[in-house]
Length: 351
Image (cartoon, rainbow, N blue to C red; front, side, top):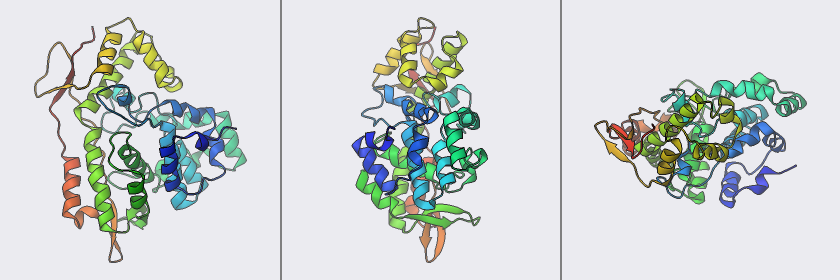
């Protein structure tokens, strides 16, 4: 059997060792199932990885993200069911990730593909066999929302939100910190009780929490800048147009790799699709305007704001950082109130 952990890029190996110094024995069996391995061919970048608009991005797959989330949960909870729920939480992720939510019109929640999670797990004979072996029920692992350390509502800190903040800041979206920084921040995190008395990840001291929030704010803006929003809508529109002509199926979005789908796009002879894709792929910047630009690919999108207001331990209590730090509150408000020009455009147009 292949060992997923042996074949990782060195920087990802180091990162994972920080998240959990112990890899639970059962995890590799589930990672090696075909249903999970499909996620190795999907980038968490929502397609941005494939354009020169976004420079020097680190390749990081949906599988890498899912494994990292499971390691964080294992580190704090040592609970097999919660760890597996974290591993499976993105098992229904299609190519170009949240770009397909854009295709489905789900710009602000970006959860439209999650409904397939149970179906994909149920249809995996390998996963179902392993769950039976481990005496785990499907309903104990098919919805990570039921475990607050795994996932919770914005702006709370969960394993999922923590992981994508770490990895995106490690170079998946921007290079904001290194392994040493992540280790310092991670070692400062503990399980705390929030305002509702529910478990939540929080910080032991204010200074470290402020450092985390500062980079969180930078990333929050990057997730919804016009370059990213245009890219996600652009890929969504390509998928939609190809689907309407039966050149790609919904099944393809979940079963093909991103490289295979890109090959289909580049070979597409309809609607100027391949030409527009080539222009986007080789572009180094986009246009922005407060007015709609005619005769170009021009979009106006309101996307999901991703931000975190973590808890911090102070005098034996757990308090939201924006209540005790002006710097953190300023960064959080920067994330919440970030605005772009109304329209983003590319010098091409679908026919």
